[in-house]
Image (cartoon, rainbow, N blue to C red; front, side):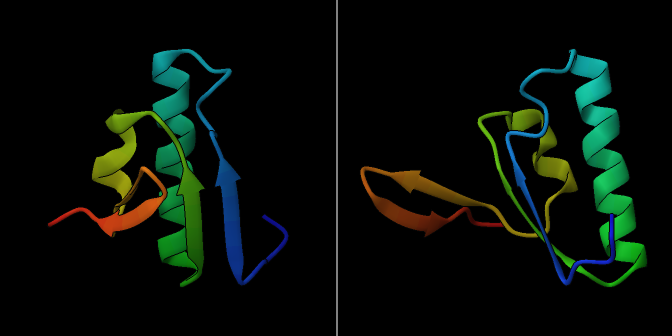
Length: 68
């Protein structure tokens, strides 16, 4: 990262195999927490949810927060 205040990741696991995709998301989560930054990730990959602090779903144009 080039020290952004917010990291935006659009489908970061889309073109990666399963293990590499999780490695990338784990690395991003680690860096974001260590550097006290924010990240917004858009994905269809539910396997990455454990790396997220908050999860929102977009359903029929309505954004709702997933309960913790």
